[in-house]
Amino acid sequence: MPATAKKTGAKPAKSRQAPKSIPVALIDIGLIDPSPLNRDAGRDLVPLIESIRRFGIQMPIKLRPKGERFEIIYGERRWRAAKEAGLDAIPATVEDLSDEEAQARRILENTQRQDPHALEEAEAYERLLAMRDRKGKAVHTVESVAEVAGRSPAHVYHRLKLTALAPELRKAFYAGELSATGAFLVARGIPTELQAEAWARMKRYAEADAFEDELDDEGHLTVSAIEDIIDRDYARRIDGAPFPVGDASLVPAAGACAACPKRSVNQPALFPEPDREDVCTDVACWRGKVAAFIERERREVFAVGGTVLLEEESRRVFNGGAALPWNSPWIDLDGPCHEHPERLRWRELLGDLCPAPTLAFTSQGRPMRLARRAEALGALQKNGIDLSARRPPGEPATEAGGSSAEFSSRPAPPSDAAETRFTAEVARATRQRLLAAVVAAAEGAAPDDDRFANLVYETILHGGYHNALVDTVKRRAGKVPKGEQPEVALARIAEGLSGPALRALVLELCLSRGAYFILSGDKYPRDLARALEVYAIDAEGLERAVADELGAKRAARAGKTVATHA
Image 1 (cartoon, rainbow, N blue to C red):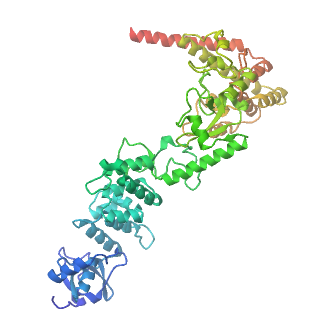
Image 2 (cartoon, rainbow, N blue to C red):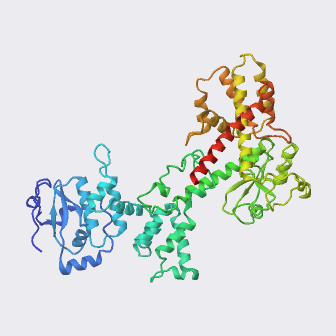
Image 3 (cartoon, helix red, strand yellow):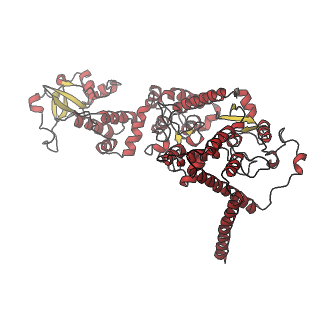
């Protein structure tokens, strides 16, 4: 090895003025320091030391001046091995580079080697992104890192995800027990804190006879097997969430799921597959939200005098499935009532008559508020609403409805489906028109009119709970604006209202609460009928006008259809 070169003769011009070809100089090993930003370069040096003793340094290292000394930009392993081999000097190229430029060169050197380990590459990108200038501003973005490294942004995103691997997975990755794709799938789909548990599970699968066909030639799980395990055990479909995904108050620290960066749909660089299901990739957060939602459901059910079933009791209720059996004696209070012509939810239909709920859990852990069908129908029947005669075909009779023979003499509903729909449309439109007439009469009344106060009192006293806000917004604005809560829309409608107009809105809300409670033999809900009487509104005349108006539209549609086919 030639004599050590003097430092003064080794330092080239600054990088901005450097020629394209940078000369190689022999630098005294004792004048060189490692960079604090370099990774641990002291591993497995023995083969490299032997190679240097036999063949010398084949590639120069890269240095930059630091005062009277030099700092390694890349090539620290060669420098360490040269020291161990007893060399006094080492060939190097020297450039006066800034911290940002030096780190960029490290990235280039690491990524341009013949076989850089994917995790080493990821850590290099991570360090580059972590760099800040004197003002604390990030020096690089993923796009600029990709440009420096000569890679695509997607490649950089994929590599960076590997930095989310837990220590156990990093060790397995370095040992060759995981491929780069398998490691990426784990880092992408399983939270770091659960990866050790997942890796232990995967190793158990690899040892099981049932997974024999899912192993590669070295006895490790294939990429497809790893993907299947993640999809089955750790991915959670957003559309199957047992909790309201838009509720930011459920777990305040996590917020709502809509804009969460851990949803696959919000990570297009990591989940480029356009037909892939939208899933949550943070099963730990998911479990926390499920637990919080179940606890909230428990508290609410207990607060109204309800009960909560144990796991075994719930299993019997659902027969181990995810839905109630067709002949179950239970009803889902948040599900539709198929006996009702408008398929109202049981909770809306029962209103204040709703019995204390029973909280049960499906096989998927979804909490569901139930009630006994017989109890629900009995409560409705006592208030003049008999739905048992409208049982779906094949459904057994209930205690509240009596035997099937009792209903065989009841008149069957019209067989003409179109005529039935038209009748229901007329009824709905008539109710809306009548409500508007009552509201107009209330708004035109004198400020000291007692009828308003009496109607409000009677409505609140006897009315049930319904989607009054939604109905009122739709009547006044045509529809609830997309993405807006009806409470917000109604508050905007009410802005500026005062006196008679505001009182009319209050009356409209109160009457809407009981709009679906029609007692047996009555044509209109009790509270609406009372308001029609109080304000002397011609209900029959309005109904005829509505029927004529809708009939004309119906005839026009039919004529247009005939003309089209002709």
